[in-house]
Length: 399
Image (tube, rainbow, N blue to C red; front, top):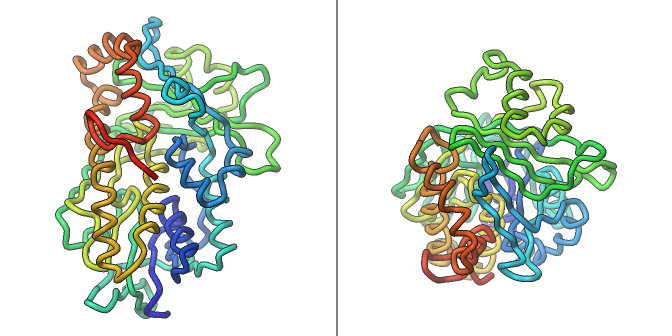
């Protein structure tokens, strides 16, 4: 393998986007993926205006729009009818919107771009570790000889073990709450929804989001369903609780969901999701860089995971030039304010939406809806959702 190439570990949104953006800049790239046949696994995604700009720069936005569904509003309430969240992208900017899209659709677009660019893709090759020196990085591969590269980008998720090989202060704390989720076909006559959430305190949360089609051949659009659960209840939930009881809880919380969950007939349709709060003092160590959830994993409350991954890839490519340690150091400076803000915001908001807390969701129910009617607070809230804030009081991301 040529010393001049950059190795990327992980072929998810962050890894695939970074490989494509670097290849577009003329950089040789090798992608390593441990799964023999990568398949897109994960809940539907809400692409914010920031992520959309990256796709536009890659020439992929029109295809994404053809597959996904525009989302103009986020609305969340309680069973008693108290409004908790009511945010309109159009109040942020007349042309702004979110894009609900199936992960399979997005990954299909990104993987297609990798093939167009001729990026070398090593499937079924697990990277066990790495060693770096002043000239490059050596990858230790499971059951294979080592490979040599000029730099290494880690994009293998929040629970990456390779990240621990970086000489950087870091922590990864699993969230005590996760979720089960699925994408169900929208039944005939089902009310047209946008991003819809229903809360009971912070211990129950059901989310619905239209996510369009996985491929152009699909005749029916999908709706992503998300049900919050403590991690302690995720293991063996289907045996302990049973699908019928779970559906009953969903319908009791939000009766309007009944026609949709009629299509949920097998517990195997539901996948589990776990999250971690990943903190790193910096995201580079010499010739090694962490991006995406590997670098800054957070809870899904702000809907920023895929967007942050796309922005990471875009901003990394913008810094290409010179030796890789300097490129990675400039990248860290470029991304610091934006990533720090969203990491802090995610940690602050999560207990209000996924926890056994009492006071935090009580305050949320009484003040979020009221505060959202104030123009300044609404502008700040929707700017946060849109993914453009770089500070609590001021600062906007420029892509």
